[in-house]
Image (cartoon, rainbow, N blue to C red):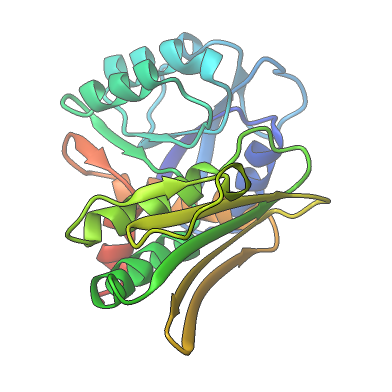
Length: 254
């Protein structure tokens, strides 16, 4: 049985995670951290320091403002931290890297198993197709999403960039310049509308043929399920910085 602390338990993602853990035989939530402490089937505390019980992992889907208290708590208690909160500053991501030298830390731009498997496939394709195929990335999200392009689209571009023998140029705004597409470019495009949870497509366009690799998320549950699987993956791990690539590779051998 894996014992999970859920930070941000009253938020939308926290509630989805709670439902998934309830349906998982070998997992349970021992407590939650949230500003709202009322009406829950498990104890909820407004401050991490209020809980001193046993736990195997902390899943955080809260807010960057809770980052300092939570990371200090995880370090003091020596509990693996699965950081799912988005919008962290560069200083906070640097802190996670430093923290990983002392405790196990799991941090990924996207918590979907499918998206991260897609990134593996895209990397393999890029190694074979680069130079003869133009590469474009299209991401689609709901009309409430503030940042563009998405962190996942940038993670896909970075993964491609790591797989090819030259430095790619990221191009976000083609209408601003009238010129032919360069061979080293990766075009990155953002669409915002309706209630789209998250769609990502990578297009490899060559002479007389096009290859597309796509991922479509129908609900937030795919991200919550990935977070729970990450918590189970991290139980008993030594100090270090882990991500979805490590989890995918532990389950799927390409």
